[in-house]
Length: 166
Image 1: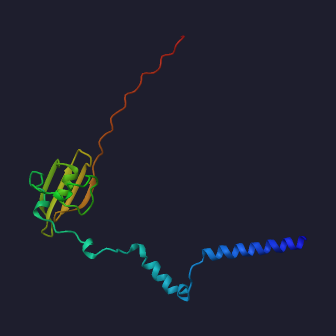
Image 2: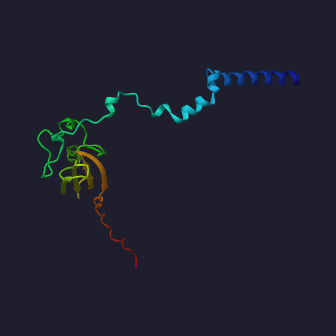
Image 3: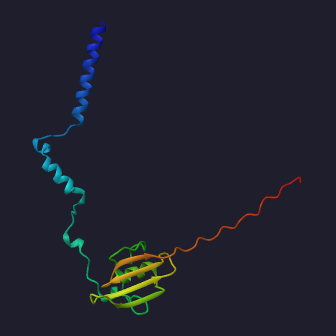
């Protein structure tokens, strides 16, 4: 009786193991065992590919309405394409007016020309939600230096509790 119980346990274990292996396996072929194919997947992973069109990867040209004037203001109609967007973060490659729309009027503005003959602008924000120095070349943001964060308001301190019975 003991021998048949062991045999039944072994058969049940073999069936369970076969089922588990069958559930975890996939279609295998000889090409799956090719090491050159494995190396190509490591050097060119599929998660790094871009499935959109090449046109989606290029930036639109900067036009006059994207540039900040001498007073640090954008022209009428500038940033109109962003009117429905939440005014949140600032990222590289934004135009001058996209940054001004998000950060407000700059405290300091420097206009010039860089060594390549492109328009060079430096906007400095001392206060507001995103203080810092923002540098542009050809109308596009290429450098951000974070400024000092606004100081948090000091919490009032409670007076020490009085001891009773002294």
